[in-house]
Amino acid sequence: MRYERVTIMRGFLTPAVRSQASDLQRTFQSLSRHRRTKLARAAHTTLVKADQWGRGGAAPSEVAHALESGLKALSAKKK
Image (cartoon, rainbow, N blue to C red; front, side, top):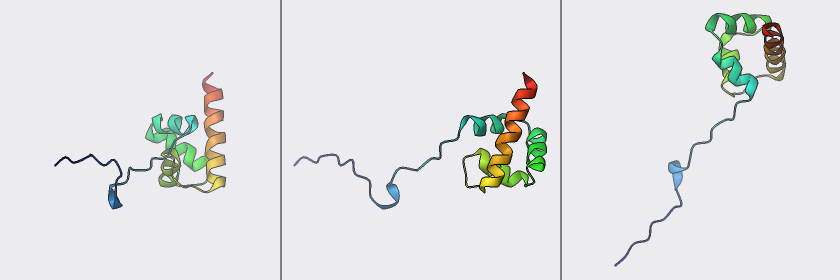
């Protein structure tokens, strides 16, 4: 008797879904905690919510827009 390998995964064995972070989110993740705190304070949010946005998690659009504009200003300042 011969068994064929089945590639279909069942139930909880489904592959994990991973969020895709943008370039700005990866840049935010690479910053120091102090710099991330300053950007979060400028965006009128907490560091926890800002870090969630940096990982690609759910964040309000106002917070995301404020963090993106803060990162763009920071990268323009560095150049």
